[in-house]
Image (tube, rainbow, N blue to C red; front, side, top):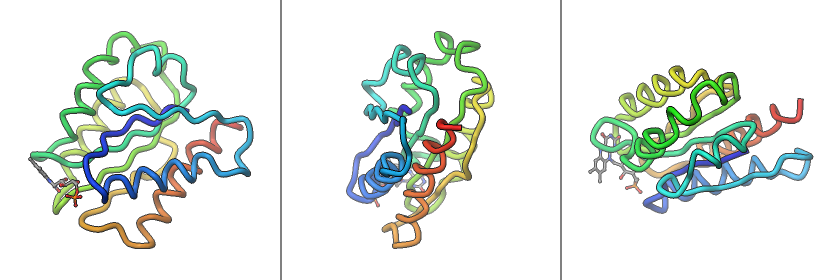
Length: 147
Ligand SMILES: Cc1cc2nc3c(=O)[nH]c(=O)nc-3n(C[C@H](O)[C@H](O)[C@H](O)COP(=O)(O)O)c2cc1C
């Protein structure tokens, strides 16, 4: 499973770490988790993965430029080849993550990816329930790869 994330702050880092922790839980066997910062992830990373987890802050009403750059790079090289692969995502924001969520839903619909968990969205400092939701997100998408 490939985790592609843009993590510019401690609040985003807390969500990222919880997602990684869920995805790498010992009870999920035979899933290798690869993490890539969004600005360094490549089409080869995407083609080699069976599923994806995406994480971003909401910036200026959209996903971060870094995650958008990732999609710009991989969209056509991965179109068709990755159709139907499972994914999930999380967004951290200050007050309104709607545009970021809509943007990710739209691009992943174009790619034909299949969302296998509800998105986790958090504004402000993540609380205990938010961190647990991130853990569940990572665990759910990873566990789906073992079916
Ligand atoms: C240039 C800029 C634009 C931003 N735009 C949004 C936005 O449209 N919606 C939102 O919810 N948060 C927005 N934010 C807040 C970021 O999402 C937030 O800073 C980021 O998730 C990191 O969280 P933290 O600052 O609480 O650690 C923006 C932040 C910056 C720096």
